[in-house]
Length: 118
Image 1 (tube, helix red, strand yellow):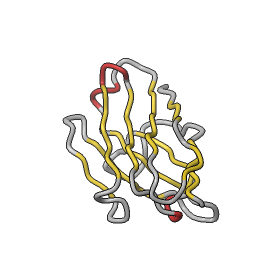
Image 2 (cartoon, one colour; image 1 turned 45 degrees about the vertical axis):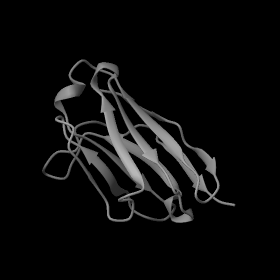
Image 3 (tube, helix red, strand yellow; image 1 turned 180 degrees about the vertical axis):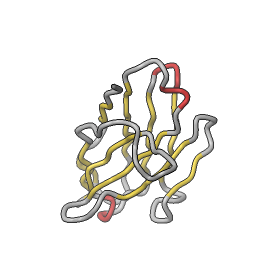
Image 4 (spheres, helix red, strand yellow; image 1 turned 30 degrees about the horizontal axis):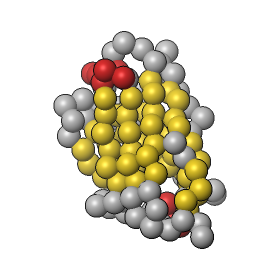
């Protein structure tokens, strides 16, 4: 079973930047598409960004042009560079490997809290 460990969250002012990391255990990380998801208080978890095993990325409309997803297969790590942060980006951020069915391959990690506030 792959374990996911997210890090890099924190408190940042509107307009600021953060870089999140997600480290995955296991030796076959590179074959999976990976995604970032977030969950704000009282809301359902939502899609943020996805990167295929070949490096193609797509984004939720709400973060397009501000967030960039990338991966380093040698380090079993996926990143989310977040720029021009807004208060509505406040949430716990998680990573996982999505199935095309809409479910996920692995159990969720603990996530990393991002708070955007002045």
